[in-house]
Amino acid sequence: MKNTFRYRAYQLSATGAVLATAVLALAGCSTSTGGAHQSAQSATADQVSGKRSIVVVSHDSFDFPQELLDEFAKETGINVTIHAVGDGGALANQLVLSKDAPLGDVVYGLDNTVSYRLAGKDVIAPTTVQSPDKTLNFTGENGLIPIDEGDVCVNLDKKWFADKGLTPPQTFEDLASPEYKDMLVAMSPATSTPGMAFMLATIAHYGQESWIQYWKSLKNNGMKVTQGWSDAFAVDYSAGEGAGPYPMMVSYGSSPAFSVTKDGNDTTTASLPATCYRQVEYAGVLKGTKDADAAAKFLAFMLTPKVQEAISAVTYMHPTVSEAHAPADLVKFGALSEKPVVIPAQDIAAHAEEWLRMWQDAVQG
Image 1 (cartoon, rainbow, N blue to C red):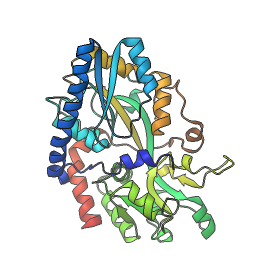
Image 2: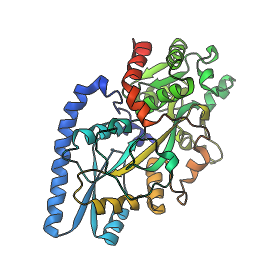
Image 3: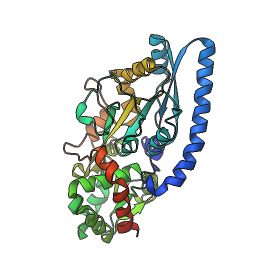
């Protein structure tokens, strides 16, 4: 599957920062040193040549087309180096750990399931670049600009349900019904970005008083929990690589765009729009940048339609700029949910530790 690369890059986002602090701190020290060394090398080379340069810090799945970087350099005289530091969770942690000696000038790839870790940490600088859609400001950080958006939703194997003569579920409540016992595989919110998003979706749907009881119902109904997306897709999901025994898994709203039939008229999988959590990826200028003007120019460049379309083709997320167009299969088979849920970053920041511990007690305890 074409999207496996992106999803595997996210499988270990280590969302439970409090539950894995020691590990993240050790990893952070190691990665920060390497990133600073790479950035220093790039900066030194540009100083010798007399060119302006910036470093864009991102997650591993940001494969920015070199021709666009070359075009930006030609138009502005600014060279851009992309520095990947891991998955989305690692990215957020590294930004906090390195804020006194930033790894670069611009960040891209923080999504609203991990951006809460930056709250009050003085990592993102103010910017004059305007958001293309202010309704997508779920981060609590004014300097973060929405670049692309998608959904995390329960996906199902349409062929499996058709072969069994079973009507597919539609809602959160359906998933806990005995009719769908032993059919769902989900991910731990402590180690997976989609796992965190799905947990947040249940909290938004059921409220802080009832969501944990829902998870207990899912557990009692035979739900399996894996560490990451790849574990579920490679082994457990019936429509995945391993053709496993579970016909439903927590995945992305874009996933059905990668199971299109040969004639291009249908897809063998589907997402459940009623279970979707809106995931938005952001970019921003890092405080401590040596060239705020160059950083802002690149941030604005990311919002041009051609760059938006290039990012959409790489990430299979939807552009946030209305003039930009997503790939045809994504538009047709991976459309955004009309009624997604979302929790503001400040609420996640206030309760994440508590929610993760409650989840572990109920599901893994």
